[in-house]
Length: 294
View 1 (cartoon, rainbow, N blue to C red):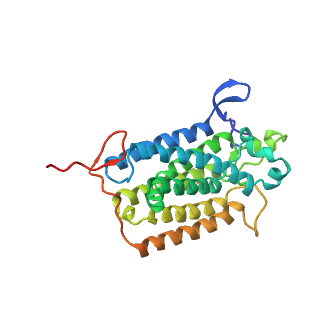
View 2: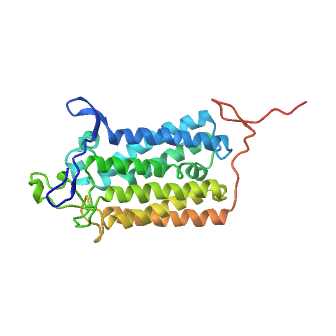
C-alpha cells in the first residue's frame, strides 16, 4: 500500500502464522531460530575443515549456553539500558516479552558470560571461542533487523528520500495521510551490521590467518559493528532519552569500539596460536586422536 504522496506504507503482519488471538509464530522469533540453525551449519563446516577446537558434544554445550545468553542478556539489557524507569516502576516488566524489547548490547554481554562458562567447562580459550562465534553472529543481526522492519519497529528519522517508508506505529492515532515518512533504518542496519559484516568476517576467517590469533576476529567484529551502528544511528529515531547529546546506541557503541581495538592489539601482542590438534572428529564426539599403530 502507498500513500497519496507515493511512499510505501509498512502494513506487514509481524506474525507468519496466527494460532489464537495475539499468539502465533512471529518473524522475530523465527529469526532467532533460523540464526542458530544456520550457525550450527556453519560450525559443522568449521569442524570438517579443522577450524574448530570443538566436536559435536562440545558444540551442543556451546549452543545451549549461547541461546540462554542471547535471550536472557538481550531482554535484561533492554530493560536496564533502555527502559530502566519502567523496570523500577514495574519489576515484572522484565518478563513481559510479548511487548517486545531486546537489546544487542545486553545480548552481547550475555554471550560473553556464556563464552566464559563454556571456556571453563571445555578448557578452550575464551578468545578462541569468541573467534568461532563472531564470524557467524552477523547472520543473526541481519535476520533480526529484517524482523524489526517487518514488525514496523525501531524506525528511522523523518525524511523525504525516495525510498522512505511510512510506519503507522510511529504516530499511533494519527490519520495515515498525516504520518511522516521515515528512513527504513532497520534495513540499513541489516545490510551493514548484518550482511556486510558477515562477508568481512567470513573472508577474514577462511581466507586469512586471522583465526590463528586468539581475539583478533572478536576485536574486528566489535570494531566494525560499532562503526556501522554509530553510522546507522544517524538515521535511526532514538528509542530512549539521549546520553550526553547522543543516542544510547551510539553511546554504548563507543565502548564496544574501544573494546574491539583492545582485543585486536592484544591478539597482535600475544601472537599466533593454533587450535588443539584434531586428527579425527567422530560424529557425536569431541576431538579424538587417532590411535598409533603398534
